[in-house]
Length: 535
Image 1 (cartoon, helix red, strand yellow):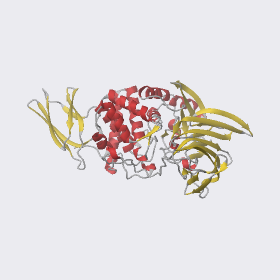
Image 2 (image 1 turned 135 degrees about the vertical axis):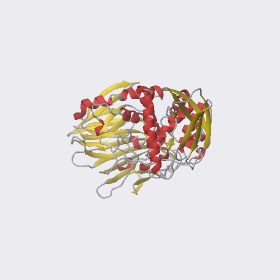
Image 3 (image 1 turned 180 degrees about the vertical axis):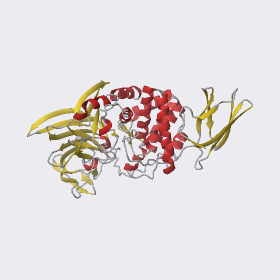
Image 4 (image 1 turned 90 degrees about the vertical axis):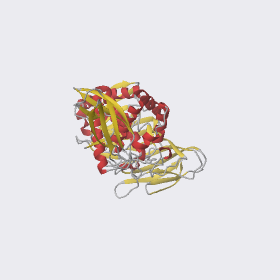
């Protein structure tokens, strides 16, 4: 989602996840969820200006009360010093609502506790410290960019600022008429209001988490690059980067087509690719992806980044983790599906190259951070991103693919997306879908690779005698004995014979019949196992 620079979005890393029996997962995520209340849609009407960084907002929210409740809460950062928002009014329908605004939360008490849909309006204004980046582009032009991940929407948008409650989105942006505006959703209006003001409205019918809603307001050069399965694919770049940007972002249509053909239908109204002022390398905003300013070079060097962020449209944006501690369902998936795309385009050697780099990062990271992918010690969503949630999560999918075989793996992935499209999901839900696809229990696989720290650390040697290769193999990590398939490559005269072994003990001896002594032996020649080879 957020790419740091291997081609990932974030430049901040830490960790994410948890362990316990996979069937009884309880997420550490501390956000106070209210499952009795479900936001159906937001209408965010914002007024931007060139005189100062003050924004004025009117947010209209339709809320479904599934049960009788006395109150519900929206996140909004209040005024403190020069930053934050003042609320001037909250209304239920057209009548003033009973509310309090303190500790960055608007607590609203409905006029009745009856079930059903109620409409609320919040009027506010202020200067956002984060979330909405008001700055100048690299070319010195004033700009406004939404940069919400993970929970920064509350700095400028009153909302349930957690991915568990997704809703359809509409943005109405009133700004000086010389600005170009792109935002989450499909453009449904652009109107000159007079007095140098222009209104631009975008609407996204599909439910979206607040972490991936956005606006981009500055001078843009834009082009429709392609239409893929009725989805418009466009580029929005700074005018000074017009030709380079259109060239660099054009590959997005190939990526989109690959994922639609292999995973399932795209869920959002468009796919815009936006050069932006963002804290990340890339941010997978739903249908309106932001890429760092210097991603535009005209040299087509960001294909992997583009594939990663587009993969998020399925994994993270549509099928969305229900708890921050399960963010590997976003980042691990985007990491591996980017590799799958690159494998599709450039062949299996490219997959191996990418996984070799990722495996080294996982091993190096573990030495300083011995934690599982699902790690409940993490309470701050800003810290759930790490080598674990990206590269190790991607490696888990690579091993699962090898375990199940391509046909079953892809069937399971398609079923998973079909089941959880536009919904929320946890790791156990993914496990159950894959179990159904393959017809076997996968609890030990998921428990070992996602909820147990580390990886096999293998010390080994071999000898050849009496027509047999004898391999002595020992796992030297002391906290857990991993069980896994291991391919052995027997190399003779530049030809390789691959033999599969099943490792399930701390120390084992394997014998392989072979007519002549190999020149050399390599472990895992096809990069299907996450392990560390020790001298």
